[in-house]
Amino acid sequence: MLSQEDLRQIASKGISPEQIDAQLKEFETGFPFLRLEAAAAIGNGIISPEENERCEYIAAWNEYKAKGKKIVKFVPASGAASRMFKDMFAFLSADYDKPTTAFEKTYFDHIHQFAFFATLDDKCRENEGKGVDQLMAEGNYKAVVANMLNPVGLNYGQLPKGLLLFHNYEEGARTPMEEHLVEGALYAASNGEANVHFTVSHEHMQLFEEKVKAKKDGYAQKYGIQYNISFSEQKPSTDTVAANPDNTPFRTEDGKLLFRPGGHGALIENLNEIDADVIFIKNIDNVVPDRLKEDTVTYKQLIAGVLVTLQKKAFEYLCLLDTGKYDHSQLEEIIRFVQRDLCCRKQDIKHLEDAELVIYLRKKLNRPMRVCGVVKNVGEPGGGPFLTYNQDGTVSLQILESSQIDKSNAEYQRMFTEGTHFNPVDLVCAVKDYKGQPFNLPEFVDKSTGFISSKSKNGKELKALELPGLWNGAMSDWNTVFVEVPLSTFNPVKTVNDLLRDQHQ
Image (cartoon, rainbow, N blue to C red; front, side, top):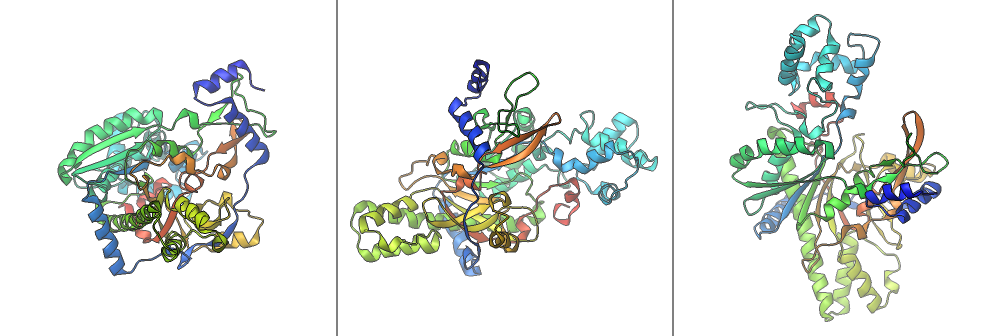
């Protein structure tokens, strides 16, 4: 099925023919749905610390930071913001010239409130000889939108979200990239340094580097720290081959195989290369202005405190198991920790002999750990926190997307729709073992949790394969803990008009 030319193309990406065969087989077989026990809830997989506990966790985090550990803030920032402007692209190509839909009317009615208004106004004067208000008064609304979206203007239709102007300040508007630098200084700095890592698309790398270079010294001076800012690209070796509806390889017009990015799950490779003790993960568009950052900073410190508190206990138990000097009551204490605190349960654990039990406990304790903030479900898109059966028969906490759940199972569908919380990508991760060695993160991926979606290329239908999501199946075999955080910490920007919400003003 694969020609010599195909093999050369595959090799140039760092992909093996065996990987291609495996991917094509996955198109044929599909992926199994996950078996669910319950949606996680307060008291059943989600903890909601009382005020005194919150103070203790924050103190634990500050104590940990003082030890000189390396902390990194990891921000997935790849991809253009084109979906954010889908409605405005539609307006440009519509057969009418004045705002007609509710979305279009909202955009133009409040255009002065956007942080990018001043730069858009300047672009309109440069390209049209008139400002935004004059163009609108003349009914030339499409010129305003064209100057926002097109390369001759601000080029917002092609730029990444991280480089758009989101928030207004007296000293000038800020991009999400800058807001993440500020956050890094406020909760992730140690030893007078803040380490921030952005994953960036190849075509945007130079723009990101230039913007960071122009901005970081000002924030370093403002917060009295030094920034170490790094970048990486999604690896070509994580791309997946596309297939025709009959599961044969999809080919472009020149006969080559079509590869597509494997989704954010591919970033487990980038995460694996970060040298750090603790890594915060948060999406590029989930930022707020300084006046609203207090909750974000407080709860980031809190979930980090939960992480290092649990990790310390896990390390103590691993060291005890290493000695071989433990009694049955100590093993029972470790079992309670794994089952209650780490929420990992095994039904037949009582039937294990002591030697088997120690092997099991060591395996469950000695793996990467993450604490995930979850917010109350208010109908926003996001992965749901569930208690899920794993391939080894254990039940543990997982973040699931709707595509991983069998919709024909009425009970599972009810769990998903009635779930009380969802995860807005608010994670803090511990990625080294109790001996200080980094885990090899790809070893902890559940490869059976990818999914297949329908796409098209030049009008031809195709099937696309997405790898297990970064915070879904790619972290399936981690120790996972959920902590309730307030909705004020979740402020995504999915459309341009989301910037008009009070949280972004």
